[in-house]
Image (cartoon, rainbow, N blue to C red; front, side):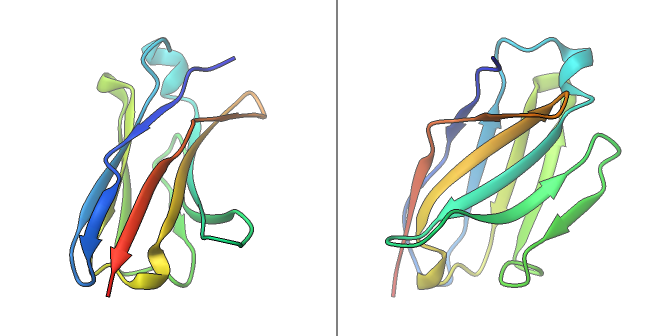
Length: 118
């Protein structure tokens, strides 16, 4: 089981920015470097949805609703991944989860709340 810790959520006004961090503090650097990391979110009353993903080769993909506003990145040396969120909208509100995919298995964090006020 991989320990996954998210942080950086909060309350922000529409048009503002937040940066979320996903940390894998107990992982070995070489193992983390091979992981695929994905950010998901769950809006109130809705299903969890993919926001962005980055592979070990740093290939990225985004949902249509976040493309151009969000940027996913990773720092293997720090065993962290980030989600930079700009021009936030009220519909971005939700609990954001980091999923570290290791050897084909999902490893989820506890989530961090993002609330965008209009």
